[in-house]
Image 1 (cartoon, rainbow, N blue to C red):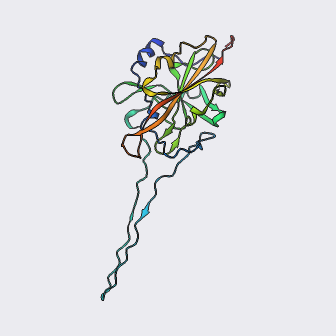
Image 2 (cartoon, rainbow, N blue to C red; image 1 turned 120 degrees about the horizontal axis):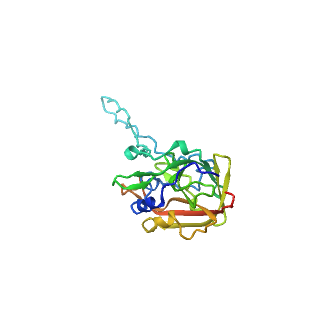
Length: 266
C-alpha cells in the first residue's frame, strides 16, 4: 500500500519526546473509574453510562395542632448536583478529520472492542510543553499519524485511547490490559485492506518510569516486522479534589505491542 500521509523526521520527534508529558489527556482530568463493570463499554463502541446523581426531596414537615391551627410549611426539594462532563476548554485539539479515512477502525475480538479511528498529534499543555493528544471522541481510538501508517512503509504505528472519560464513559481501551500474548488485533483501512497483528507484549508501567524513545522507536524490533503500539491508562486513580468524586489522573500506563510480518511486495 502506498501511504498518503507524511512522516515527520525521527530527529524532530526524538527531541520532542524528551519534553513530552507522559500523562495523556485521557489519563488525567477526563477519567472516572468509579463503578467499574466488566466492560459493558461496547461491543461496537457504544458508551456505558453509569448512573448519575438524582434529585432527592426533604420530608414534608408536620405541624403540632394548637387552639388556633397553623398552616404546615411548604415542602421544598434539594438537588444533588450531577457530574459535569469534562470540557477540553482551551486545550484545543490536534484532530485532523481529513485523515480519518486512512484507517477506519480497530478491532480487538478478545475484549469485544471495535472502535473508529481519529487522526491526532500533539498539543501544547498548560505548562507550554508539547503533549500527546487524545481523540476528541472518547469512544474513538487515536492514531498518531506523524509516526506512520500501516502498510509496510512504517516500523511502529502508535495509537492511544481512553481508559475512561469523566464522568461516566468507559473508553475503548478500558480492558486493554486483559489482552494476552498471541491474540489478534485488526486494522481496517480506507483503501479496503485489513491488517492483522499478533500481540507480543502487554505491560503495565509506572507512568514516570517509561522511556518514550523506546516506546516510539523500539530498538529490538525486527526489520521484517511492522508493529503497532497501543497506549492507555491504568492503575490507581488520584482525584484532583482529594475526595471520592471529580476527575483525576492514573498512576500507570498500559502499553501493548502487536506485530505482523511485512511481505516483500508491500
